Structure formats: C-alpha cells, structure tokens
Length: 312
Image (tube, rainbow, N blue to C red; front, side, top):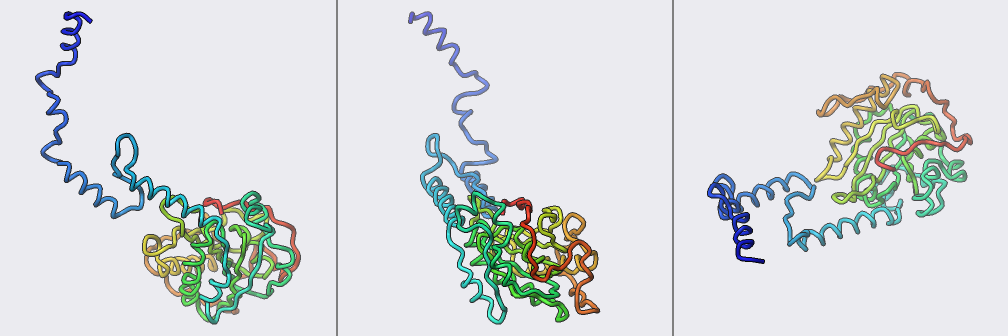
C-alpha cells in the first residue's frame, strides 16, 4: 500500500472532534459501571429470569453457564424421576387415599402417548369407591413428580380445612403416569360432582417443582375441554404461590362453581383476598350435575380428552 493510500485510510479512521474514542467508551455521569451492576443485581432479586448476566468474551460467564446446565439437568430429573405415592399418602395422615394408574404402562409410553395418560387403567377403575361425592382430589405426577412430592399434600390439607362439614369429600386419588384429563375419568367413575387435579407442571429452566391445580365441575371424559377448567399455576412457596393463597382461591372458585354449576371461562377469580366460607348444600350435596351422569364406578368408554396448556 502506498503512502498516499495509507494517509487516506488514516483520514477515514480518524474520530471526529465531536466524538473521541475516549468519549465513546466513557460511561455517562448518570450511570457508572458500578451503578449498572447494582441495578441488575436489584432487578434479579425480583425474578428468577436470567437477566444481566454479563459476558466472558462472546459467551456467558462460566458460572452462569454451569448454572444453566444444572437447571436443565434438574428439569430432566423432574420429568423422569419416579412417582412415590407412598410419600404423599404419608403426608396426609387421617385422610384416606387410593392409588391408581393411567393406561400408560411406563414413563416412556406416558411421554410418547399423551392420550393414554388421560384415561384410567381398566382394573384400577373397577376398584374406585363410588358414591355421591361433592369433591374428589386427584394427585397426579404429571411432568414433575418432585413438585407433587413437595407441594401436593400441603395444598390438600390447606384446602380441606376451608370446606364446610356438609361437603362430602372422596378419598384422595394418587394417580401415576397421569395427565390433567385423567381427573375427568376418575370423577365420572366415582360419581363426584367436582374434581381438583393437583399435578406436576412441565419443568422450566427456572423452576422444576411447580405444581398446578385444575378445578373442573361436572367433568365428562372425552367431552370436557381445557375451556371447562380453572387453573392455578406455579404453586411452590416461597418463590411461587403460597399454599394458603392457593387453597383460598380454590375454595372460592369451588363455592362459585357450586352456585353457577360451571367452571372454566365462565368462572373468574375476581379477588385476591381470602374468599368467604363455602355454602353448605341444603340437601347435603352439591346441585345436580347437568352435564354428567354419575356413573358410580361403571365402565366407560376411553376418553379422548385434550392436554392442558402446560402440557400435562
């Protein structure tokens, strides 16, 4: 390159008088590097989202990369760890439980065939206690057995304390390889007017122990859809919804469901305050279920229910 060409390149690279290289790299007086780091640290205290992690060259800092890999491993473990219904039963002293399985014979089948996770094993259905139940809780492993082991029993206990004596609550059903719609099959077979499915939600990179609660009035296998349910998500104190808050919301929704005869899009949780006590049915039972005939354990056709928004 000639001297004249070098001079031309030099002219092109010269920073103007209005903006020097030093000025361009200087942090403004209003926000120093230290203040910037403090700001991100303050924001991270309010969320589990990975924000303001910084860089090491063109990549994440090693510490944050390892944390990301650990979170991914925890999510995989939550999906594949076996469900231990005896742990949940032990955490519910004085409350009868019944164990059932879905039509998915193992975990791999459960993951590959969501439809089988939505219906009961035929043998287990025959052993369900039929009756004129107002409510049945179904504790299902879903996609995170860890969430169920840690959070399901406290939610059942907290919710049952808010129910008046007039409500007839069925034994708690502990369901293995189960999805949300399995609750429809269970409630229909037992003759329950309402079902609450407590299920492990799909793990994310910030939470592998999130529990969901799905309330359905007049469930009917193969007909009830997600639009007919009310969902409480992210039950996992202290970072998510507290047990007492979830129980109060469930109790309030159940009371309104009994009055209106429906759940889903037509039923809204309009208050963050604890709801009033649920009404005691004058006849000792909830109003007649207009959308489902209580089968009392009778054999029913295999449902083709849909999956929940959370994939469970």
